[in-house]
Image (cartoon, rainbow, N blue to C red):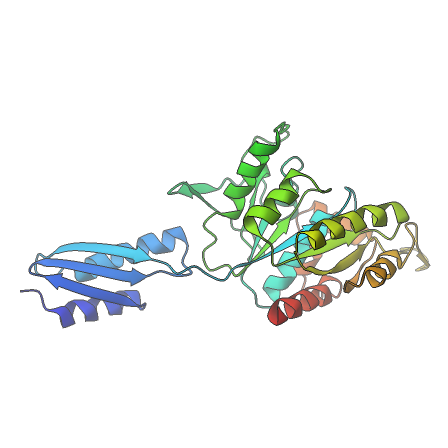
Length: 315
């Protein structure tokens, strides 16, 4: 005869998580909560629970369940390429993680993935379990997935719309474990990936990246319009490449102008999140896979992430 109290105590000792035990003769059924655990952690939990419940030759069945987490998606978008959107997305993800959120990063720029280099994850290949991808860890505490990790380096991805939509689904619907926030680096423009993201994965809000120049602002306005028409809130606008400090004399110049994104945000009635300077240090650090937001002394991305975190807490 299997003693229920003995089994429950044994399972609780090794699992430390919610579990229920059902005993019918020599059969023991254990249902245990694995919310927030990664796939390897769930496997270990199941094995430990099975070993703990296997008393007196009982036949044991362990079922591991998980509640759906309230995971929020933040879409980082731009109306055109070349405005530093991916650099901003990587640093925003790291800065949010440093602020205490459990953050994952999705590189949804299917045709031009750059996050593996930015996050020092080049050459890392994700594994899969039960037809779901396991995100790749990074040195910055932000797991990530990118098409750049699924294809050979330098290989062109020449896909039509339905294939990009399927790829996006694999990245977003991966096993993100305890992650509560997904930063999604979208491709430039307002095409198939953006529409699929809005229709199937529904971001909590969108962050728009633009340079101060008029041409970039025209396209950024289109990106804002796309999300606004779809009912996706605009978290705010970030002005990138805003001001250049000469490393020799310290004089500030504005090759792309200054204040244009802030003025456009005010005109459209959306928040302005802050400026990122045009800096050789940011460029070289990013190329080396060392995002500036990982530096404890970061004063550029941390305030922007704080405003995004405040928006998430209030929405």
